[in-house]
Image (tube, rainbow, N blue to C red):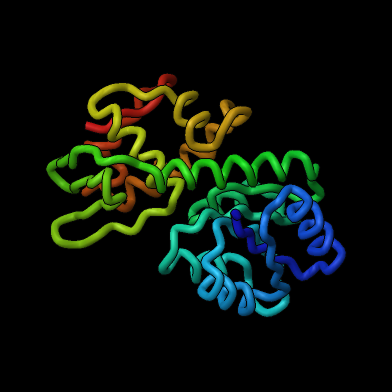
Length: 226
């Protein structure tokens, strides 16, 4: 059974989320503070975290960083912070998706299903060749990227994007295909999501992120790995 940790200090909302998710046969745990969330992530190792950013004891971004320090668990941010800057900041710190309060429960459930489905697909990856560039190596079967002797830590979304590009090494992958396969149907026009994660990948992998030589943008078309 898929385990979900819901982190929110609004007791009525936390209760509603737990009830709705359990009704759909998820195992659900709740946490009302950042510290209890970090403790439960380490102890329970859930399949998905739904995270509010406005917690009473610490900022949700710090919770994101704490989880991403050791885990690739999918994280769906659920927050009243609606500015583009806040969304980009959360994505840059490792969030896989961002839902703004108030929200539609059916949409949230759909995003939960999409996030858990992507995670299951990643865990079921079969052996694939190792891909080498002049600056880093991608081991698709192990889900690892290395630069020299150092492992590069990627978020689940960053890895999914890179893996799709690696599967089409040297070929153009359309923006629409990346958005649909990584985030799911209905995200074809969320180009900002893709730009944020591509920028993060370039910072981690390119010798000069402002002048990429491996993660190439084809304006108006998509991206390719070379």
